[in-house]
Image (cartoon, rainbow, N blue to C red; front, side, top):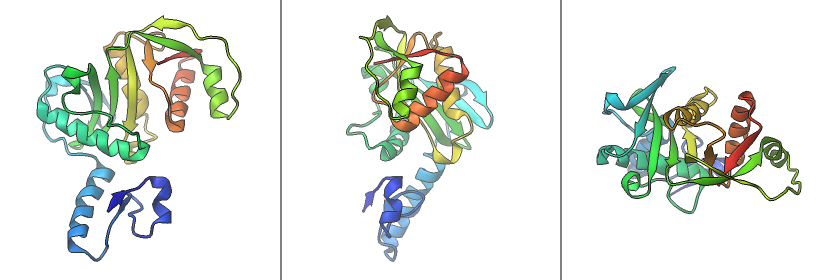
Length: 224
């Protein structure tokens, strides 16, 4: 069995169109495994118990939480599981987040919970100290497939870097990803001028960032 990307679902008759798992449909053991994976991929990893003191914001039906130093190992492991599910869509060659990264790698996780499930997450790298300027018009050109020569970018000091943002499919197009980004700005007392975004950006991430920055009348981003 294997997980395949959403774009390839229709090419594999054995793959579930919703969770992407290819499995033997008449195998009882595969059916049970599919039921577990399907539930988590479609509805989110379970997160029934959290420290309510770490809820930093509420947005619609979501609770927004911050996982930082001192967080329980069990919560880090749940976030690692959710990040692994997210990675099934992006297919990065490395894991997005591992339990222990908060203490060892300077990672912070801003994440959303809904109905005791992890609905989305954003990874923050607090070790980032500088980033390059990227004019928003250049990002638009790249989204349109137009690559123009540019001058050598300047380096700016930054407070932190946003390494990854992801929202469960069933909760997309509700403003949750934008809310996660804005929450980072608030928590780190920053904004577009001193919070950077990690490259390379996926097309979906680039569109999200472009729309969010444009709505704030931002003229340039910081990338690292």
